[in-house]
Length: 305
Image (cartoon, rainbow, N blue to C red):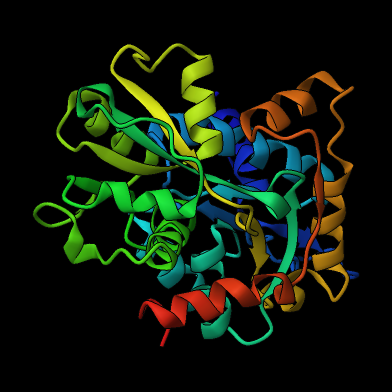
């Protein structure tokens, strides 16, 4: 009985040791290598729990479409996302305009391959606590009314939460030293909304899509905070893929990943859920050159050297 048990255990372990029979009937180690996962990531621009759900569902979809293991790996902040992409810990990353440029400049051959339909004409919102008595602004020149107010951006490396809002403030003739005290950097858009809602800062700059999503979910107290200005349009979020994937999965793999995004269909329930989480109707193609303005502005404020 003991011999039978040992034999059965041996057979169960065979697949784990990757053994096979050679032509002479002897066992030999298989030459088949385990496929390394495609590791995805994203700048942490919102609440981490919300992002975990969003990117886990996307990873499952990509794994099915691409035929390789796909893993979502969260990062601590925007800079960590860029660094992880640079050293090869992340293969495919959802970057904002600025972080995308920063990442590509450090990884020759990196490509911007897809963005949401809303990302080629993206906007930031300036929001204000209602106790500030600030009224909606008509144009860029009216931003001068914010002088002497307390103000917070999102992350220091956020395109919609810092780079473009600062650019428009400077176009209005405002310097960061014109605000009351030091400007804040909340870390992400959700935190910016909460800080302005609480009155910790009178005014803040946020990603318009995050604002609308939180308002729709009734997670914002509109009796306390309101939008006072919407910026002109600019290019923002996009997927960037590391060239190392071609060595691992083949020369055509980048195109396969791009096609997987373009294929997302709002008429397919599980795919619609992913699109809804991204607040998009569809994904469209993009290219590195679309972010030339972002690079120029980034160099101008010292975020790109």
